[in-house]
Length: 183
Image (tube, rainbow, N blue to C red):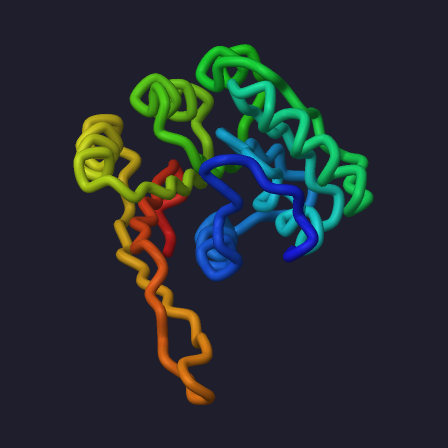
């Protein structure tokens, strides 16, 4: 994944992707939506883990769509429907949504409403701002789809005068919901 082209705000760190994908419980032939796809890192990793995954990657930033397209080509991910637009509108027009990873918080309440209306089995949202986390939890609770919230801190070893120290990354909150109530 270190070969990914980059875009502002991304990519999602590999450790966070691993936890998010484990919480999504993806299955073959799922219709997976990567909301606020950025570089496409989450979709690329999901595609490598699950056969026959139907991926829709959405972003409202043209720069992100261009970068994701190049990354999908570089990693030979052919089964992606890459969409430029407002995520809640794209979701509302979808026939079915089994699982969704939400990496952006723009219009998050509308996105959650659209995913709940589609009866998404699993929804995983990554957020870094505490106000956003609270908003997401409250909306998921209102919709009856809230499962759990996880606070993740990752530190990376870096060289410090020939020895190793740990430098923390920004903490991330992973909010899990959906119609599937199993953990």
